[in-house]
Image (cartoon, rainbow, N blue to C red):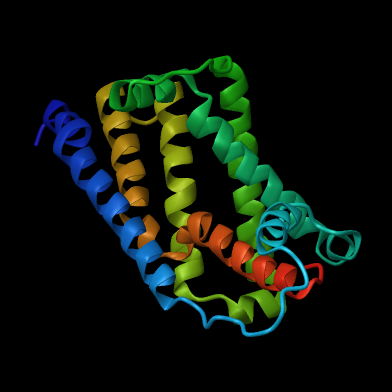
Length: 219
């Protein structure tokens, strides 16, 4: 397969397959969670499930003082690479053009040099997270293959995207093809790895908050 053929496959059939697998996988995961249901409570409501669920969804996104003091590195590094991923995916102009061609919607992007700097910062944060996991005795003991797989498929598109942007190591078409294929690998594995928490965590937070709200306590 030539470079041009690989690029055509990545932009065509590869992207179609990856999108189908990711969307179908996410739908199945969410349906499985929703089908679990929960028993109806016979107790008298002491508060609002809606308010409790919504409040918990947002409060859990901001660490309390004790959590930050105990796990400052994890909190800071987590915020850096999550915000960095958002900027790189949704605010890089070439990516916005892809969303526009697929969904018909567009929005303003950031200068390429700024996104490039954010990419480097995000890669550094992810590398720091990996080192921390490897050297921290408790985290190393609790880590499974799935943790490292999720880390790898997350950092791979950033690295290939950086190489493609700077034309390092290969021709332009080959670098772009490899970048697109790395994104498609992420998309395919997304619903079946720990990366699915991007969707499931909101359901979990809502569930815990709604129960607490019903009981009239803060989650």
